[in-house]
Length: 339
Image (tube, rainbow, N blue to C red; front, top):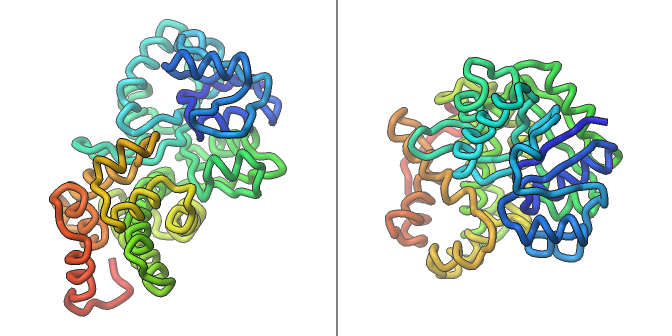
């Protein structure tokens, strides 16, 4: 039995924790909302994040980080991007005190604005300096709501140390979730983060009543943008973007009402203001934050990402959606296959 500490007890953290307990692991969830922890411990539910669903009875929850990390062999980060760095700093202090070096796994999909760092880079910087091999990222077409219902799911697990990726693959896989290893840690993370930006655009098209042709074009050109950013700015393997973390996650996030980013975009397309949407969403819309980092990367590295840049202008420069669509369709002719 492997002890796994899951940092973050929202929808995805709770579902992953329950899945890992189903697999026979000793799982403890860490979160800072006392009422949620109490509900998980006493009722084995998390109604705020996951309606009409129960966790594996063996899963425990705590707000004591040292208790959560004690004897943990794997620490799984399932936090909003904006919280990763501050929690990582605290994790480093506790691990130094305990004298342990567990494997770190991240299920967070984002790029930090300002630093423009991926989650693995933040964890390496704050917890294991110069030891990127101790990080594994999991990413793919996987909504918490579907995995909770034991829908069939496939996910990539990536690390610069293939043995660590294989360990996660073994511990996390079961008869309804299948994990595939990938050596391109950076590419898997870029794909998982930037697809949220494209999902906002996909939702906008639905909100504006555009049809299937428009959605297909958006996803295809969105994948080209994600690939361009990953290869030019991060040195990622282009093939990664044709896999589960790339096109797989892009498809599900751009087409499913379970996607918060898609729902945000749909409401934007219907004319609702961004702040009202975010205030009523109840959970973090990662694409709305990630697009800031993407915008900064585009400016600094002269990367052509017209869809992502249009979303940035809509969200943060009050640009009109209809105007941005008109500008997009009126761009000068380009070859389809290019970096």
